[in-house]
Amino acid sequence: MDVSQALATGTPFEATAQGIIHRPELTDPHRGGHPDAVAVVRTSGSTGTPKQTLLTATALRASAEATAQRIGGQGQWLLAVDTQYVAGLAVVSRSVHAGTTPEVIDPGFSAAEFIAATGRLDHEFTAVSFVPTQLTRLLTDDDAIAALQSYSAILVGGSAIPEHITKAAANYDLKLFKTYGMSETCGGCVYNGTPLPGVTVDTVAHNGVDRLRITGPMVAAGYFDDPDLTAAHFIDGSFLTDDYGSVDEVVRVAGRLDDVINTGGIKVSAAQVQGVLQQHVPTAFVTGVPDAEWGQRISAVITGDTPQDVLENAVRTTLGAPAVPKMWLRLDTLPMLDNGKPDRVTLTTWLAKE
Image (cartoon, rainbow, N blue to C red; front, side, top):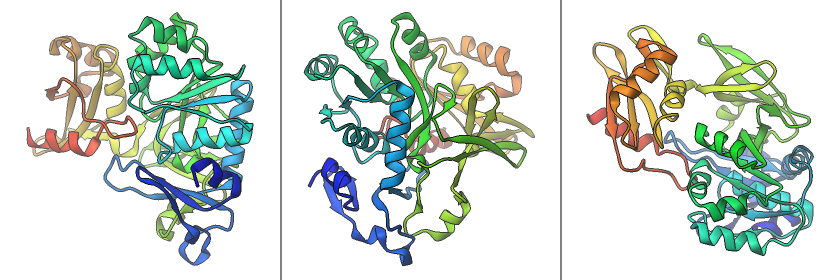
């Protein structure tokens, strides 16, 4: 049985790198299961604590329907993300809902492989979902850009989206949807800053910042076998995220609760510093490490050859002097998890040793 068959038949499962695992216990209410449970997705573990997110058939269906409505149709998908992650599982779910078969490509594809796979799509409406690293690679190849222009919808999410992707989408007229969501919402539920149909995003005050809360039919049933964590995050059909931001005309995600760096008594968003740096370098990672003098020391890992003084001035001008990193580590490439996110645990460990 593959993922498509499991979703179509409602068979509870977990997709892993080794294959499909039948998980009948997901429907057991004594372990926090749900009678409508069809899949469990383990979070990426980017902070070192993976969770088992329980997705129901109803939630996945709602996500697929809302996505089709927002991107303007449904058809055939290119599956470029492993199904053990919610982005890949969502692509298969949307395909089942549309009655189509996705074209599968290895997540580490080359430009030539992407172009060939795109050519095999035979539906008038085509879509693909990427993590930023994958799309960045394609934007350096003219033929790959031409292939990207043929898609009816290009979704990108899973981690911070560099400014160069936004600019390239405008320059090449790509039908890009920058998505925000997580395993607990069946993947992206905010597209280009606007919640999907049926989704509401608001904020809850938390230690001086506004914590984002998501309500909608695609919210997961909870965490399997973890009632305490479920009670802390899932309340009356809403999911209380670990992100903070603002909601006005659009949803703006400022960063994670654990990326607020308290340096010398001043709170600085690691995500905002990283965003400034990524306007000048290919990739960047920013975090706070313990420091006897400052409490936390703002530290940055970067790639590329942009001079450090240029980067320091950019941060100082945009965010103020307290936000300038006090430690810099320059690498050829950042260590990444399989889902395209920076390996926070490894990077933070390296910085702590500097």
